[in-house]
Length: 213
Image 1 (spheres, helix red, strand yellow):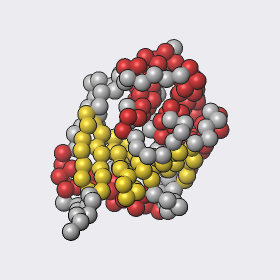
Image 2: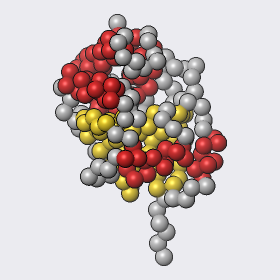
Image 3: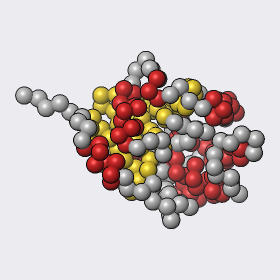
């Protein structure tokens, strides 16, 4: 049943998933529900709502990824990073969170699903110092846009992008971003199957190129 909902929802997003990918996504939801009965990993308790609110909401960002290295900051129980890593095995993902219990779940799922393109790191974004910056940095419902830039600007590569998954169009936050030099933004409205009654927007931030004389 869960697998069918995942497959149908992905199709409505314009994405064809293999049976293996669908199976891994369904196992992720099953384990999330099992762990969630003991540890508070997510406020969503209903499995069908987990499919829409976690799996499909994560996959909706897939077309906007760029570059081979992706960082998911404030990943929580692994969203959107784990679903994206499952369907994009050729990309390298780092999933970052300061909550030890949630990172333990992410590490459990990496092993459970045999994922070789994912690393889970327990750290605050502002303290994380990777060997190299990332092509895409993703954050879902983590912080206001100005605060997000403050937390993660050192993690975004020179030609990279910062993707922020938001609910309502964050007009006030974007106004505040415009007062911070060095970034340009665009906003894309998303339609997520099962969340049609919820506003979903993707904000893309890129560094402004220095003007050449």
